[in-house]
Length: 277
Image (cartoon, rainbow, N blue to C red; front, side, top):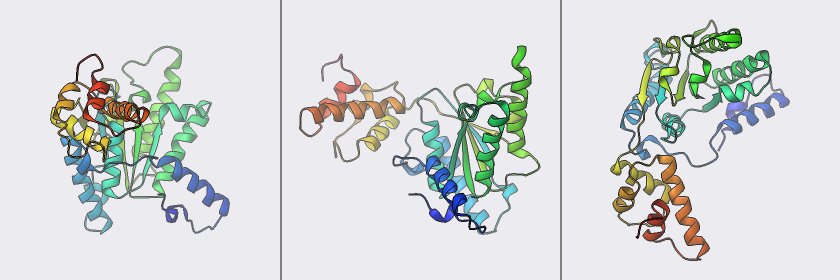
């Protein structure tokens, strides 16, 4: 649920209030978001997130300054491992708003000027709701000066420089933690990984059987309550968290179409339709 207090401003402008509510609604997840305690197979990001939550709490109390808080992290890993979900879990555990951007969304605004304005607006909105988290998906899309060439060099350079300006420019970003996600950490410009920017990298790989067991349980909710899910997790070994969610969705559909409660065979068949259950 969106906290309407976040949209209130001293100017009392009703149109501005409506716009800010719209922005907040658009940046909040529409489905239940797990907290860090519910993430499985992501020990490194869980540990970092809990440390960040403690630091943000101390910052709110005035016991530490912002310079003592991690201001950026790069979550990397193959598609579907839950990088954005992990970022949302960090925000939920920290108890702070989360704002989401991406170079694809910013570029959809139109020309270079419009794209840069959209990027700046995301960060300006975040600065009005500190402490908070900004997630920038596919941050490698900012470009890498090692590989820039051809007619687009000028455009790509301006985009990268504008992003760097938002990370540590004159306006600053006290209270704003930036989480960048990428499938290709080797394509991220070195300047983005300097101290005070996205200087910490956490790799999220495919979950092991124990992690998959927990992920399946989270998505199953009350379905298959009390069922030992290790067999299903072994069937699913090598799958991503996104695939595990799809398995549960397919299993529910099979049970729903047959108008009965889900059973283990539904889940096993969703995972390995070519294998006897």
